Image (cartoon, rainbow, N blue to C red; front, top):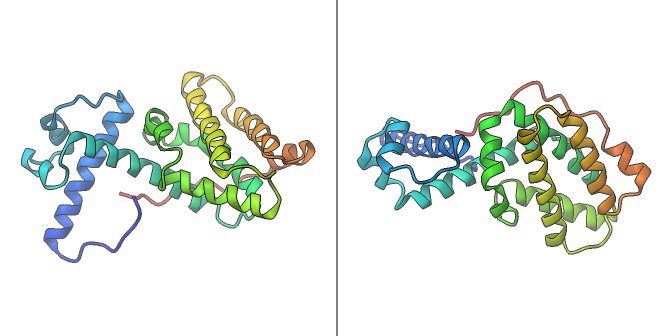
Length: 218
């Protein structure tokens, strides 16, 4: 979730830790099975917090699981921010995003399972990766890099294709994920109006160093 100032006293720190534990437990459930029918008692036990603590933070399981999805999508977006810093070409940002997503299916499977199972409903949200993708699309449209189109329509195409790639990585782990990401990125760039030769080159530019893991958000 968006980073904020750390809690200022012991009570606030413990309260924040309990909330994080509940969200993390919900994320694990979403990643493992996607089944949100688990009881509040089971969620609290997985989080290693007291049953009564749940209602100090959430009014319902629905609210908790929604918070868990938003948390995962924000972490996903922050990964992109940290790893793609310095890239200014909107087309390169789109292509690099596809390739990083394919790699994160291996390096951060829990996170990507949540994105895979729940990301579709957040393509047009104002958090996580969606707002960052919309920012890059609007920059590409404003600069003439992309063909004029309704940004919301472009975001639908971009988000749907990205989620399809994530699904492909889990459904077909035998495939070359990076090559699939490159091919899809090239197709999307051409769809956005980038000339074929340019799209081919941009989709294959070297990625920034991604060896170091992104800063944890929880």
